[in-house]
Image (cartoon, rainbow, N blue to C red; front, side, top):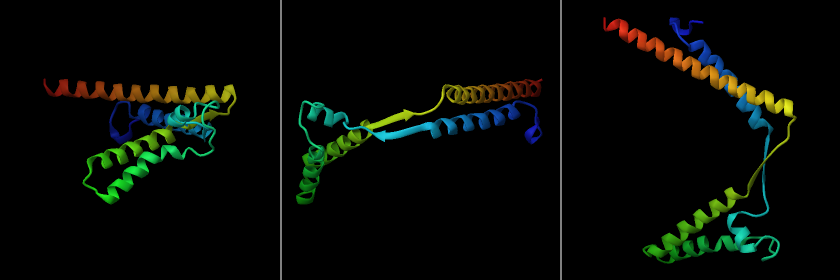
Length: 144
């Protein structure tokens, strides 16, 4: 193929991109994302099933809420900014650490998806290397 009227690996590159996108789409389509019961901080505070038995982990919000309260009272207090920022960071870590991924697919589908991804990555690499070799040979011919 000569897309754009030039020799090289453009056809391999475009075909590889298509295979790579298809494989990644099917992979992402088969992954289910759910939220777990405990996150990083709630597991420590609750200690699993043997610690605090709460249905709400509102204690994770306390540093953030106290920091916001301090900032509304007097925004020039440095420790209020640190408390609000640390509390917000703690909330984000808690939310992200609760995420769980689950895949429901047959082995044949799993292998097909990863073959698509591997073939696409191989073709993209081949196309890029062919274009690099073509560019190097063009530069060496111009130098003569």
